[in-house]
Length: 221
Figure (cartoon, rainbow, N blue to C red):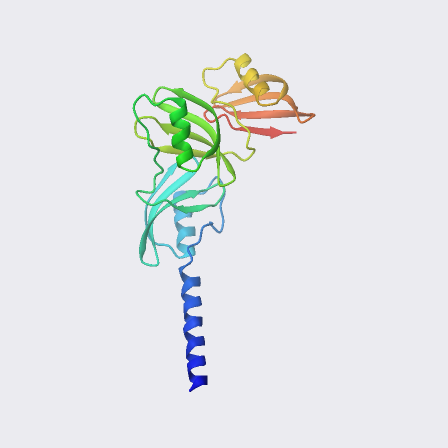
């Protein structure tokens, strides 16, 4: 009798472990880069076991989608540059709690409530707030609709950014670069949404490419 109970208990334990393994929701895409299309994102989610994937939408470097996992509905937020998959609940679009006339301190507090830290380079133009921040150890540049609260994020691989450069003179861009630690910054040219500059970074001469809409800086030594 004792052996039968032991074997039965082992079988139940094995089945429980197998169910737990099956139920663990994947939180990373198997393959990802900043050129992945909506169909490619959908195919990768399907390969991981997600079902009934719908409403795949793109904003910044973030895809949102609705799907099912283990028969339960999930709302996903997928960073196509980092490959991270988050179940955000609700409609799958990250929303900030905004109010009319919200000031910068309240804006930073609203971001903190969503898990963002080290919020800086906050600007507002029209009905759009922009800022640089970190979450889960990754740097991001954020754009927030001040009326709806919808958040668009752009992954920042270098972790270095200034405010969006639209409307800035070369002198103002150079001042911003100096403020965040670049020595002797010189803006060379601006072509469309890209600004080219030179300077010194941590004792090394570098060439910089600045994305005008986000302020994200790529350093080329």
